[in-house]
Amino acid sequence: MKFSENRLAVAIPLIPLLYVVIVFAPSLVFFLSATAGILRAQFEFYKLYFEDKNRPAVYFGLICGFIVLCLFYFNVAPTLLGGSFFMILMAVLLFNLFFFREIKLALLDSAILYAGVLYLAGFLGHLILIRQMPEGAELIIFLLAVVWGNDAGAYYVGRAQGGKKLYPAISPGKTVSGSIGGFVIGALSGVLIKFIFHLTFSGLEVIALSLCLVAMGQLGDLVESMCKRSAGVKDSGGVIPAHGGLFDKLDGVAFAAPLLYYYLVL
Image (tube, rainbow, N blue to C red; front, side, top):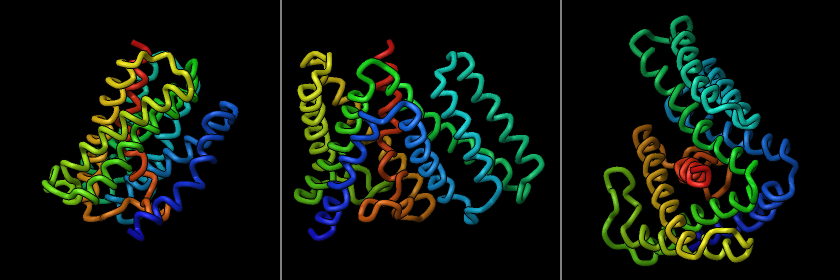
């Protein structure tokens, strides 16, 4: 229980600060804050694989991630944004052509570098696009409440109920009861935020959308667990005491943010 209390003690003072940045900060300040967090998560992702975190490859990957986030901020045409990922892939391959550490690792290094750009900067960059939409700040609050409500529900219900493991080969600590608790708390969080901020979703729509976002959040969490288990580590970092790294906190958001954005657009 002490660890659970530590999680709450750390989260409670951070929530108002996060709220102020999302809701009241000017667009540029939000972009710079989001970029710092996303690049930190991308760095933690690279650290799982690259033993030497000061390698030039890591910095090159972060520069590519920053370029992608700038394209999101300036809301460039979809064709230019899509084309940029092809150009970044070419740049990553050319980088490793001249700066590979071992020829047998060149292909794997290239894949990890590009995956970090696409997975973290590419997926999480949709938060920047959502912020620029009508009700954008409130929609981000909605997204975070659903995904992190799911995380909290899965954590506390899973610890209290235990039971059958959800996917022990990937994440031995996750349980079916925790997953169900995550769906319930995540959906309730979405409904609560809808009424607090008067979002334009209908009642049925907000429940269905929240459940879909929870599902994507849980898949994102399992993907991150797969990455960490493959690397043999428990937490991606310690930047948030009792919670782990930013990669740990944004794994579900990374999968849910594109879903919310394209739902709103389409």
